Amino acid sequence: MDTYYKPEDLNKFPQIGKEAPELAAKFFDYYNAVFAEGELTGREKALIALAVAHAVQCPYCIDAYTQACLSKGSNTAEMTEAVHVAAAIRGGATLAHGIQMRNIAEKISL
Amino acid sequence: MENIDDNNAAKALQSPEPFDRMLIKNNLVLSREETTALQINTGFLCNLACRHCHLESGPHRGEIMTKETSRQIIAFAIQNHFASIDITGGAPELNPNIKDMIAGLSPLTPRLMLRTNLTALQGKDWDSFIDVCMEHRVVLIASFPSLNPAQTDAQRGEGIFQQAIASLKKLNSAGYGMEGSGLELDLAVNPTGAFLPDSQLRVEKRFHEILFNKWGINFNKLFTFNNAPLGRFRRWLQLSGNMETYLKKLELQFNPRTAENLMCRTMLSVDWQGYLYDCDFNLAAGYYLGGRKIHVTQMDCLPAYGSPIAVGDHCYACMAGAGFSCGGALADVN
Image (cartoon, rainbow over all chains, first blue to last red; front, side, top):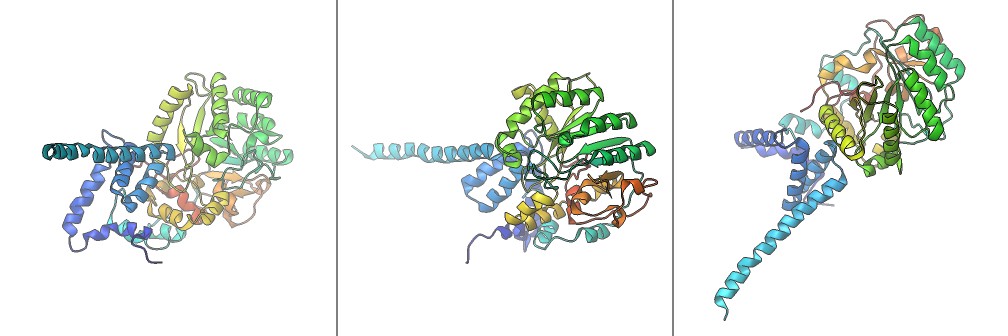
């Protein structure tokens, strides 16, 4: 069955460097630096990344960061809460824009 | 997607390389050095049937070391000095001769260790076992895979997390893991699935904080292990469709820096019948020491320096990431 997403394509990510190797190199240097241990631990960053992956709905990132979170000692209870954080922020952002709707409606309504 | 680079990405698409070829590619030769450690497997009887067990130990296993074999091993340990002796299983506590074994071995080595799942014995049996361990200053290495009950129980069985916590508290009351007691209590952490552990230092720090803050539990050191693709774990990998990706994961994280301190270089492993191996994983795989079945009573001396070590694809587990030996990680990971 044909499908847009194939799990094995995750390993082809570095191919974004084809025809733009310097930009890819800059991206991957930055990416690896972002996920290094810092003020936040690698574990905390992996949980954040997992939450963001759900917010942007990237199946590759969800796969990669589910595995990363488990490797860094997290568990599905923590990871579920992280997904809910993403849902709450996305849902909240949607609702917050409802204020804009009301502003406009009130302006042009009698 | 951590530490992405072109090389690893290309390799990830190929089938795992046989371990012996990986050694050659990295100009590594695995051969024995001076033997300093003896690991004794008392048999495969265990009250648990942990899903990651490389030996498929469990309640229905009948392989139990006899008194005679344990005497032969003690005699061997008298003839040859070992800096450490490590008693493992199955559940060593369930061997009927375990107390005599501890008493016989403790004068022969400065470091006698015993690996416990914290649940094999209950009540008075557990109390009297701890008394023997205390008397002989046995170093206890306790399996404790996760701070999360669901993960622990998924690996070891329902309710095991709470039993383990209760046992750790009891060990602390007896002095194990407490500062100044001289009674060492270490934790062994295996991942609860087809993935590698985090840095041993970070895991140890986290376990210290959370075990103390949540349950008032102390311990000395923590060792992270990788799950070897053998036994029950191997079957689970195959049935769950994780086999190839897990082997690949191990291969991609092959770390040549771990080669120097691999346990097979300095350890002699003896099984419940008294036959010899380079390590417990070779025991599980059936790879005898020197490629032939040698009984401990047939060994006039320790294996020669430079003699070859049998290897198989399961050896990737010991050399992946930080690698590991019976004493935990072999190298740092970022």
